[in-house]
Length: 127
Image 1 (spheres, rainbow, N blue to C red):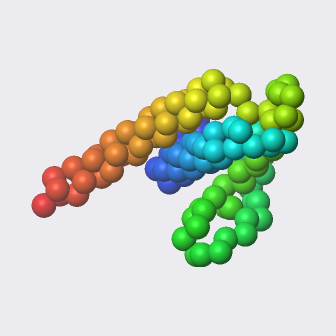
Image 2: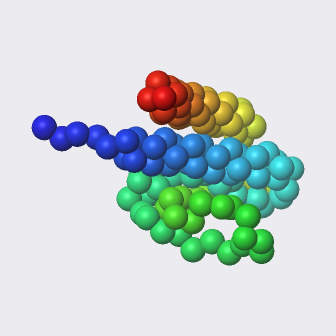
């Protein structure tokens, strides 16, 4: 029987939150460029994110994109037909992506908060 360690649960929740943030950042960038001619919409790919462990990210400040490089997040062009100006951003798709990412982040945050409440309870009951 395989047991799941506490650190594995916390690491999985951290990865879920990190991927959700990356998806929101990609969708926000797409929305910011909705009127830019020739802009190719970006998306965070789930399969490649799971399969990869490292991605080289350039940061201009130590706190920029903190932790994103270690998670293996991959961003690629999103599929979709281009408009006449060459832009592939679809407003409805980006808003849906942002909503789903917010829900994923909130679910992981709730689970992590519950985990820490249990730890705090165990510490306080040991007095």
